[in-house]
Structure formats: structure tokens, C-alpha cells
Length: 274
Image (cartoon, rainbow, N blue to C red):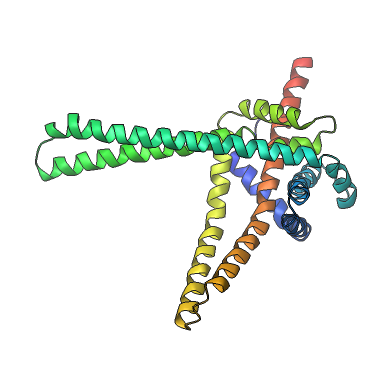
């Protein structure tokens, strides 16, 4: 079976989100309100996030479910959603810090090597100096890209964990984590591409958020309000609104990825049986 193009997965996620904007926005809003309450509220947040993915998957497979009945089924695995999210967060956090330290050390060693062993042999002409500087910059950029790619790769291994937990009835937390890793491995480099494209789609929203923050800060300063608490409240409120808007987009993409992988696996199984 032919896989869906990564760009089409992101586009498909956007189209489904747009067609179900009202219901998905309400679910996302409820999920973020639950975050106020520790533990139980956090579990409800992840469960409601997964609810969006399950509704999307059922929509794609032309087997839509009522919101209320679906939510009851998802809520049966509250602890699983909370613990799996905690495990993924810890794994990604540790991996990020380890890779960051490794990248910094590699960058320092590379700089020292180039300065002591390569730079003395570079001709003193302006052109040669500029080319040497550009080469150094390109190497640093390559190191940064490699670091980001490795972080995304690790994160992508568990990208559809809550989707599996929400959709598959007889799968527990550990089973969802293992199956996410297994399915993503079979997906090649497509998860990294999908996450990168989706991040680029979200970039204008984050840029708009920064612009609005700048305008608010300018307004507070211009009118001499000198109220840092007001600015902090507005900044947090806007950030929450952005997250409420963006969450369903990511959850629909996860559902699209899961559908694509399962569709391919079922197609291959059918071919093998034949």
C-alpha cells in the first residue's frame, strides 16, 4: 500500500480540524481548564487530547462516534494517559539535555581544532578568510541541525502513544509505548518530516503571538502603566489561547499518521495472505 505524502498528512489534519473546529476547540478548551487541577486534571488533559485523535481517526475511517460515548471509553484509561505522558516527557527531557551537552562539547572541540590545526594554514587574503568563516558557520549550522534532528527522532518514537491508547481497546500504557516505537520505526523518516512541516505551519501563529506581546509591552510602557503583573497575565492568557488553538491540529495529525501506518500494515497483510 502506498503511504500518504507527509505534506498531505499535515494538510489533511488541517482540513479535518477546520471542518470540526467548533467541537475540537471546545474539547481543547475543556482539556486546558482541567490543567488547573494537579494529577487528576493533568490526566483529564491528556485524555481529552487523545479524545480528539480518536474522533479524528473514526472520522477518517468513516465510522464516526458520538463525542459523549467516546469520552467515556477514553476516560477508562486516565492513569495510562497520565503515566505514559510522564514517561515520554522524562525520556525526551533527559535525551534533550544529554544531546545538548554533547552538541556543546562537540562544538567547542570543533572550534578548538579548526582554530589550532586548520586556521593557521588558511591564506591571509580577504577571500580566504571569508571562506574559512563561512565554512566554520556551516559546520556549526550542521551541528545544530543534527542536534534538532536527533531530538525530533527520539520524540517521534512516542508521537502516537496516546492515539494507540485511545483507539485500541486491549492495549495498556506499556503496550502503547512499545507499539508507538515499533510503528514509528517502520515509518522511516516520515515522522520527522511530518513534525517539521507541522511545526512550520504553527510558526506564523507563534510569530503573531510574539508580535502581540511586543505591542502589549509597548502599550503598557507608552501609557506608563508599569504593571508587570498585568503584562504577565496577558502573556499567559495569550499563550493558553494559542495552545488551545494548536492542540487539536497536532492531535489530528497524530490520528492521520496512525491511520496511514495501520492502513499500510493491513494492506501488506492482505497481500501476504493472498
